[in-house]
Image (cartoon, rainbow, N blue to C red):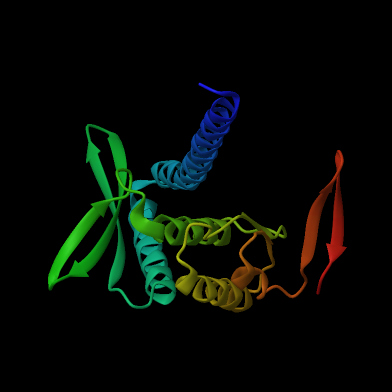
Length: 206
């Protein structure tokens, strides 16, 4: 193998390595984002289980209605519903979350623990965060970290409108960290944060 062929082979291998490394980083970021969203489900489970049986049924209905409304508002071209199943046996309870949709005239139920949900989980976790905040609200704002990040671009504006309308309806402040322009456009104030060495630089945009 001559020198030029060797260099070309090395460069090709480097390119293949970089492609694999970038794909690995992408998958790790997707997994971290999914795990973060699923943490919201765990918090909701704990919240429901800590309630008395009478309170649990009332809050269950509130969650189902509020989250179904959010799904239908944001993903407006599909017939979607959120369902909570609470199985009680011998003094203990187990909480499972499902997404119900109408497909070809039939109701399909998806276990959200077994599916990434094609962006549905983003909407559901956003709505769960909002409902739990409103149930225990105080003078603090609702802080959202990269909400609806995996949501399809066509639904992002609707997600921003949902957040704007619900904050105005219930009169509370939302502080949101996002790279999604369609969401940031709904903010009354917008700041860009960039890294400057070991510190952050903050610039007000609006």
